[in-house]
Amino acid sequence: MRKIAMTAAGLSLAAGVLGAGLAVAPSADAATACPSGAFCIRETNGTILSKNIFYNYGNHNLSNVTGKRVLINNQTGGAGFELCFGYSGTRCSAVDRAKGTFSPYDMTPINSVVLVK
Image (cartoon, rainbow, N blue to C red; front, side, top):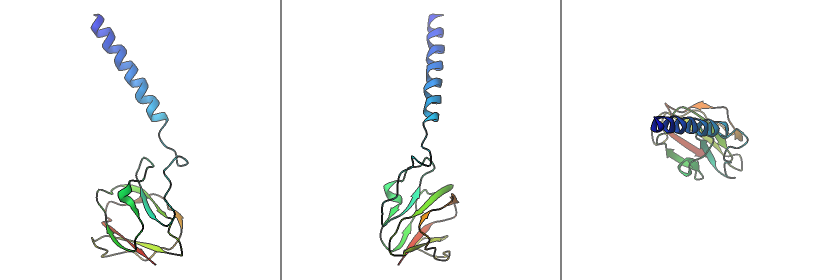
C-alpha cells in the first residue's frame, strides 16, 4: 500500500512539473532572434536551429522542416528569398524582399529556399 501511495505521489508531482513546464513555454517575445544578415526558419517552439540559419546567396535544401513555421528575413541590402517546392531551388515562388518576421507558413511542401541579392 505504501508503494502505491508513493507512486501516486510521484505521478502527481510529475504532472505538476509537466504542467509547470507548459506554463513557461517560449512566447513570441521569448523566441530566438534571427541574426543580422540571415534568413531563418523558426521551430514551432520558438527556437532557431543552426541548420535553419542561412547567410549565403543561392539555394539551400531543407531537411525535416514541416508544419507551420515562422520565417524571418533579416538579410541586409534589400536581399530576398524564394520558397521552392523542389530541391536545389526548383519550382519556386516569386522573390519576397520584405524584411522582418512573417506569419506562420506551412513548410510541409517546401523542399528548398533560395536567397537572392
